Image (tube, rainbow over the protein chains, first blue to last red):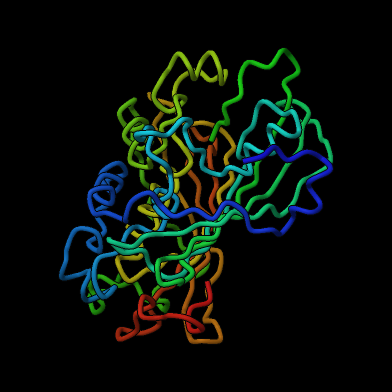
Amino acid sequence: MSAIGVDDIERLIGVEQYEEEGGFPVEQGYIWTTCASVENGNPLFWDEQVAERVTGGPIAPPTMVSVWFRPHHWAPGRATQGLPLQIHFDLKEGLGLPEAVMSDNTIVFHEPVRPGDRLVTRQILRSVSDEKTTKLGTGRFWVIDVVYRNQRGDLVAVESYTGFGYRRGVAPGGSEATS
Amino acid sequence: MTAATGDRRLLGDVAVGDELPPLSYPVTATTVVLGALAARDWRPMHHDKDFAVERNGTRDIFLNTPNQAAWFERFVTDWTGPYGRLQRMTFRMLGSIFPGDTMVFGGAVTGTGVDDQGCGWVALDISVSVDGDAKTTCSARVALPVAADDNPWERRGDRWKP
């Protein structure tokens, strides 16, 4: 983890960083919790016979792909909490932009994720804009890709995030990113 | 879906301009907190109202992005049935959704086609609104069977071009 300053941007565009394996295998309980949270009754996730017939066995909802690499809130022996989308936080720190929002993101789905899979991610900085002023404040837009593969090396998904890091017009109040 | 195909909506059942059945849902604090924890998103603006108000300047805790993605997936696959296979989704967040809001999902078909591998697809513009104001928009593409014996989930490698 290292701050990304203005002088670092050019050499980091397109470079894969932060290879990370999910801290735990994809598991059924989280699939059901997520389906329950949005009342998703798709039988693929609730009926083993349908899952076997349609998808060759159980799968996770495709939009859950980022769930599997978010770190535990706490783990024994860990000094600091790990941060998903670390490049986003590297940019905030290095560019002196204490606030940030995510304005949009795209997910492209490939191989289905199945219970027991262990996903590996890599983050890639795609672009950083010049300074711009919006109603939130003055800052920069950036695009970060997260590439997901399973334990067999199959491409599972690619997520592209557009973030805006900024300084408020008034005194900054904190350093947490909003969704 | 046609009676003949049971739980699979076929590409031929769909035309540009078709509207998806709207979905209305009253959001509570439980909706927001359950959604955040289901997505393993521990950040306080999704469960701590004081933090959300004082640090984020919002009026309450608000739905997180991954959970909104799960809502959009549910909305799309309610319409397609289990043979619908998502290819891609692009989200644009325009505003936050808070406890006390009634969110309304709506959408329409903007395109249909068959790719060079014979995979049928449908493009959708969908959104979630509160009191008529769009809070998040989503452009999605979902694969649908082109015939009763077709299954997009069986496509792998070069045969799957999302």
